[in-house]
Amino acid sequence: MRILFLGDVVGRSGRKKIFSDIDKIVEKLNIDFTIVNAENSAHGFGINPSVAEKFFSHKIDVITTGDHIWDQMTIKPYLKEEKRILRPANYNKFTEGEGYRVFKTKDNKKVLVVNLLGNLFIERDNLENPFTKISEILNEYKLGKNVDAIFIDIHAEATSEKMSLANYVDGKVSAVIGTHTHIPTSDGHILPGGTAFQSDAGMCGDYDSSIGMNKTISISRFLNPGIKNHLTPSEGEATICGVIVDIAKDGLASSIEQLQIGGKLKQTHKL
Image 1 (cartoon, rainbow, N blue to C red):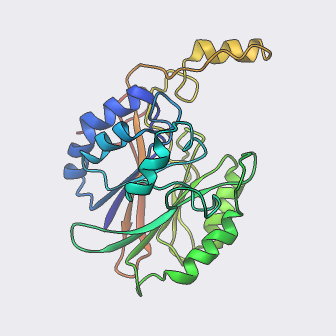
Image 2 (cartoon, rainbow, N blue to C red):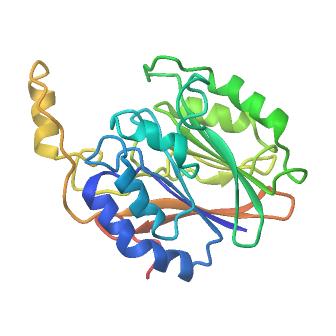
């Protein structure tokens, strides 16, 4: 099984590039299941139903999110209806939507996708410990027993928290991939127990920017900390960033590779 995971989609630039290329990527690279973190896809802050529906009109199976999931108020009722979009599982259980769910591939394989939000340097109300939450989830789901693969998107600021979580669940899940910092890391590898890991998948957005936002506005905020000019997404050509994880029959990873297509960054694949 081949799972494609794309990092944070930022604004119109990121959306446009994905809508243009994702179907070709899935077909050319023989992808069986596609996950996209789209928590910054609606003008850089959150996601709304119309944007989500556009993603699902392409070869995208699941949308994960993060700390900006609540930025667009229209998403709350949508989360109750649309099961293919996840919010972090360690938000309070009375929050709208679901944080993990089992999905089926076109070959009827069962993939558990878990969306978690880190605690370190991220201040959010009603947030449980992600380590405690994943322990609860893995008491219910086991590789090779009731699911064929388990994929975790850990949306967190600190690399130490992401790496610690991956080591904590090593051998119990197929992959742990980090999001949130918008910068693709070069540490993709398979842990001793067979779990694929990368600290951050990067973003799908314009890298001639400050993590996807207009660089002039970002610089002005650092020069004048007391003046909070509203950030807006950069509109140049986006790079699609993500990882491809191959899953063996036992549910553990057999390989992990980076994907970078378009825009400013070094290209890993040609369409």
